[in-house]
Image (tube, rainbow, N blue to C red; front, side, top):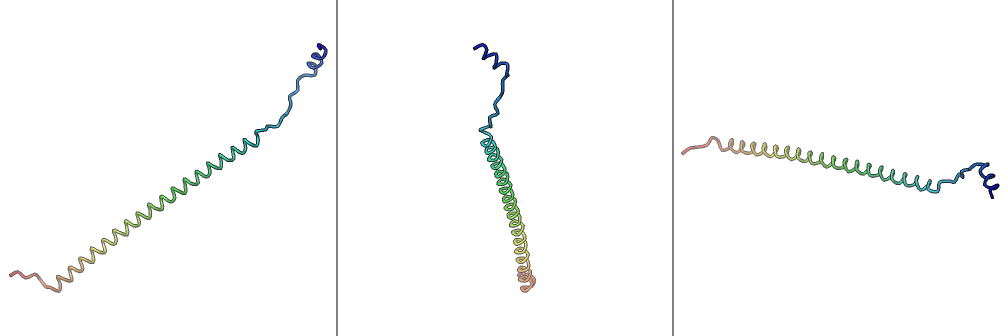
Length: 93
């Protein structure tokens, strides 16, 4: 028995190269998490882009509303001006 132990010690220890069983699983997890992060960034950018478009749309509607109100006020002043012009100066009895 001692002879066998001496023989094994003389040869030295060798390490076995065993393939990593979790290698494919690790890469799958890395790719899945990376894909999710890319999707979430893309989705966030799309939401931000849509929010900016809605904001621009609201600003355009407010601007258009102000223009229409100005046009209505202008038309009403013209209408009053024509009515007073037809009636002449006001008479005081």
